[in-house]
Image (tube, rainbow, N blue to C red):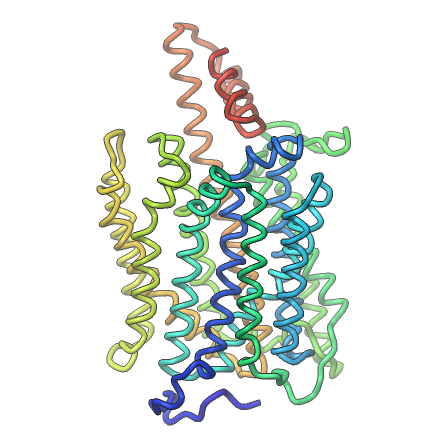
Length: 502
């Protein structure tokens, strides 16, 4: 299958006629799809208390829906990346968007948590698992050279913008209307996206229709599920030794005092090793593996994936730490915290769109390295300016620098990584890139979250004990820290205040 334009020396021709709506239609479609996938969780995070009240449930149950949504998406993202080699891209995109719309509308009208889980966590999660790798695939097959880098850069900017806009939009809808309008709004965006799907190529990535590798799919699901679950559990129950009992259906699972995280991670790694062996055997037998082994043995692709996963770990920490600190540490609302992150989002979007042409003068590798350095400077400045007197204005410069670095990094990195594999394998490569990115995000959230939350809740306990002049033993202090964390994470704002008063 050919690309959407003819190229000369790897760059898209600059004919004005090629720059109309039909040319950029695929980019518009995938950017809209990325936007709804990103804002879904961030928008609903701020609506948790409202959902708890409306559905007469608990914070833990609603947080479980968010976690299960991420888990379903991560588990199915590798087989989702294979589908463009089986079905035509245009038809697959349209069908996936319709499924996503069904899920979000079901969540919008949900009358109990079971319906919420079905619509949001299961249906939307499965559709997002296909949409995320499909966004990269569409851009790879639709554009070449600088236009591809520009389209990928815009996608990175839209993703960053969605992360910041989500809390603002969710907070406004929850405050002035209803959390249900958040899901309904996603359905509206899906309808708009479907208008641009007609500009996508109707072809498959391969000339011969491939089949889905069922065995590889099952092993990949077990592997990713084990790893993501392990990372998530590690942040709460400890990485090696259990910090609290892990109880499932009334049965405690802490063999020899170990954390359930280490067992889930070990199971995930074993399943991944079996997955690699199985895929190699399928390929030797002339079958169609879920991920061709040449993708894993490609040095340029592998190094790009590792860099991308490292970026995901850093981004997870940034997205987790900044809003939590601004709200829990400085008393900002979700709306104000999202507003404080706008310089980061705008800088990412603008930089990723307008620096893609620099590749003609500076090697892409140098641009990626420069982006990492600028991100690091932004983080250092943000840490240096952190304090009780911090204002939104004082965060503008470090937020902007972090966004500039990310915008400089992302478009070039994804382009370099996916360009390292043949176009016929771009869908599978995109699936691997997204899956590893989600693993990095889960790991970053768990590691950074567990460290910071332990410090935060430990500080609260120490402050209370100091004020009341009641020293306690170290093990008793640990029990109090865990009790405070449990109470804070499984309560509404009112019950949290009551707990702190007690």
